[in-house]
Image (cartoon, rainbow, N blue to C red; front, top):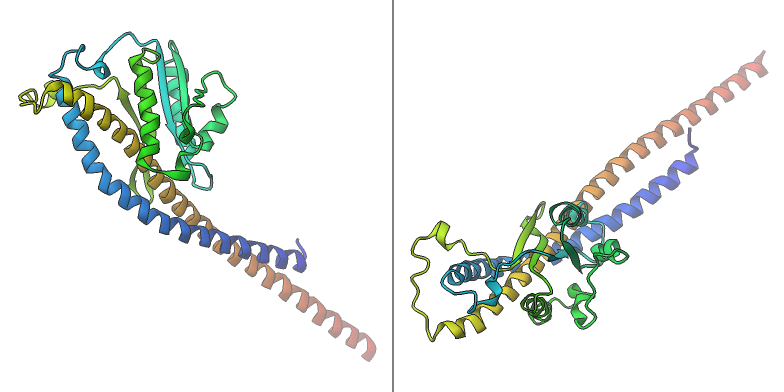
Length: 291
């Protein structure tokens, strides 16, 4: 059985850990509010724009829209979005597992590259053949350090250029979709080529009047919507990260409280046993003197 001093030291250690996890929970809660506001404001616009984009692409010939060109898939780019830090439960592992599945199972017969947005997934893939390096884009290294649309647009623009030049035949985004503070959903979303659902969901989706003309729509709307699609995925992941970390720190704080309560109970029992033994020794010594 541990000594009283060892139990006291452990109680102090658990108390210090509990203070840290509680502070991290409050910090994550404050950051979550800002990140949640950003994604809830962005999501309706991005989803509607993507819907319009899908419908619009159905009315264009491949010669007019290079981003809808469907070709034999030989080279695939998987964009994995994780966080830069840990202590957020299974948030990062879920993304890494999904990316591993895509690399080793779904696209195993193709040449797969992984673009790592976030240090956690980079640590996993930076020593593998699948790791995609692009030194020309500075924001890739730490996109969450300066999370702005302009930085994301640089990354998306480079990916779109490489798709047009046939360096990649398919581009897929893997990220955590923010549902609420305790729930994140792993999403695998195709970015390129653009897939139209107009014929399946809306028979009149192709009845558009183009203003000023199709060419301007292709040049302006489609690239912008693709950049926003990637930006939305990163914002979703950013909000999910803080939600996951807040939940993980909340559970860690609760576990620390329960462990501290158990240790205090053990300490009191050991202390009471020591006091009882001392009393018995005193009583035994007094009896021996009287006899």
